[in-house]
Length: 407
Image (cartoon, rainbow, N blue to C red; front, side, top):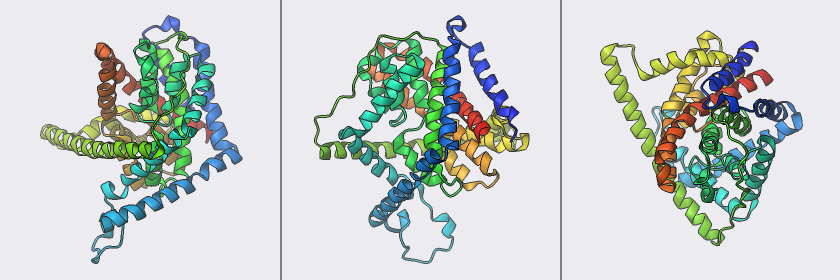
């Protein structure tokens, strides 16, 4: 992979966003420089400083432990469907992996642990700390800094709910920045799940996914400022309220929410797969080689070249990126785990490019959630969300460029 390509990619992604900016004259280029510098600083610290990278790498032991206890519990409930011993001889063992029973149960365990950490104030302390740091670094309002920091731990709609009392007072630019941050990162509740899927093809997967979200956060805030500049708001940092529930009530609520999330994931994957297959069948009527994947591969291939892939490898990388945008990053990571086409560095770079919630399904979740909170701004929410979809993918591509340069 060439060093000049990702450098050019950074300039192209930033330049294209500036050209499309709603208020170019209001862009504070110092904030843009700080944002890009923070990306490189985080990447250097987490990937090149041995004791920091080793500390993050040790977290994979946590992934393995959580996956192991989840598999044992799921096997007790679902037997061989969840990976337990089969009561018969398997003719094709390679077909015995069932996502719904062997992967998704991990969401239950991680969601429950996250709820307990939040209930006892550990997770809320970290979120508030990140929010204050973002406010100091980017000159954004305390409420936006808190919401942006929450995207590192919560999902696309859960993170905005952390600052629900302030959402209606957000400017258009602040609303874009918040949604964009949630699109450019992945939640802690699924990070362990994705790491467990990638570990066989990308050793130290959890370290890379944590690093990816941390690098993409300043990228998202930078792109939001370029596209729709805002001055520092007056919304003070709002401390996360402590729940009056007991720990067991918080645990049960988290399990209930996780069940809804799992059902939603299953439904979305089935429906979107069906729609994609239907569209592919319709496109094949026009030409046998025409498909949605082929169209997206053609459109995204130059962008993956800018990230650092050679022209030949840019095609499968673009196909994975298209899968992530149309379906979701989980499906794309499953595909990445099954491919052997990329070398080690390419696998790392594409894993960073895919690490974000910027997909069509997330748009639906965000629009439905925020429109219910702010019905008077429904049209604005829809408009901003689809702009964040594009910029969220640009942010993760910028992160892939930075990582390609650093490693």
